[in-house]
Length: 604
Image 1 (cartoon, rainbow, N blue to C red):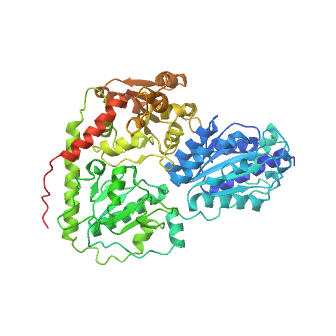
Image 2: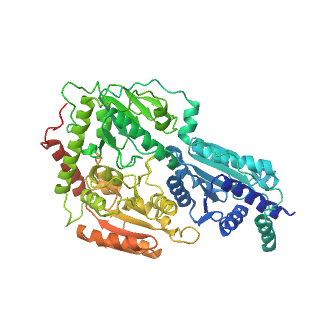
Image 3: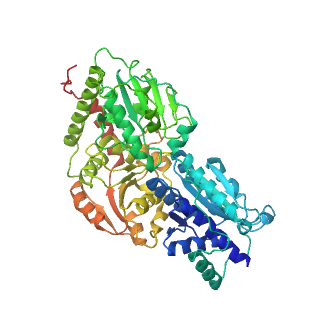
């Protein structure tokens, strides 16, 4: 057997072992050293065993894979060649680490004999990603072709388990010795053997799949004492979902059980994994805090209990309010063992809400709710309904586009279950504050583990590749930062159904909302906003992506109807004034705090 054949067989054996664990999506980047892995992925895709996407930019490819993994809850693999290609994986690896999503980064490398001797395209790439990865795995230093069947199986087992037990990125750095590329006839022989089930030495069996993140953490960590009393007043704060997709249903069921037993109001982040019909929801809390969510007479903030689920939402108002809530606080994460409490006020348990709920003795779950709890929840929900109605009247449904009004209009005009991705700057904050007309049935996703704008477009494409039609709301700098994402051509050749709503406010609009002084005043654009001269519709068209300009809110319904009917990606551009919108946001918040709202009609 030639080494070229052995390289291909080893690559096929490894990818097939990962496939048997659950690997379904592979993103392939170009390269020579990674040739055996490319041929293996292509052959498995032709056989209908893997879905394959190709991408020329490793940075964008890794973000596409992260989007796909986030949608499914199962790792997507990225395959790259050696050298700087590996360094381009770091931004997505950082986000996967902080957002706790499984990701397999498979990189080809030179054998050990070529390391540290000046050989071309040979760097210490095995160290590039290690600080943010759950595990670094490698085959034999002399080349993957030297790996035995058992070694390949163990490599696949470890990689899949480490990527999902505490979800995050795993790096497989694999040496390949030359000759790398099998001839056409040699490839045909390998695939004939594989399809007949007689691939020499590589009849790999599936090992048990890793437990979910919360199950794994729960089995390793004892239950905490219950510092919360469901018969006394409290509040639930549900932050962005940071767990596997498969765990969302159990999380929602456990949350429903707690709310029905306690009657506590639930402050819901739009990125949370909350059932649409969950009782007690308060969705307008970001506008209502701090003064429009009052406590009943006799109850003070140092008595209020707080159950915090996952990381904090992106709200300084909420953080400031929680700082003065000095009563018992319990923070439950979905398998995340790292500290998620920047306020340093909560007891944290990483076993997951579903496991925590199973370990508690809440007494009779059918007993009547505490009158104080019922009054608190009803009062806050009443305030929530009032501010939602007020916002619907305050923001126009027609005429010139402002960013708060656009969020309100999108919430009213989008199909109620269409998934939405929100770029991690102004869009995610504006949706949280102003999209109160949204029915809450859709899945909203924003990659706020590291809160960067890196890979925004590619993340959207990754979500669309896994879950179907998806809408991305992004700003102009975030879209331009990942313009190579327009190069993604789809899964197995099929176009990716992503609708991009671009809010073009001439630079980094988020900085307009922050206390960022610049002297002289005209230096603000140069130093912070950094407006660009690129026409985004022309740029998209150059990639074969159709687009439309939305001139006013009246244009939005027909534009969305057109966009959602297209088979592939489309771009809808909306131009806004970031200075005027920053002032409008402040005015809206000030007006809410000055509203006279009706006293609660709920009696003890």
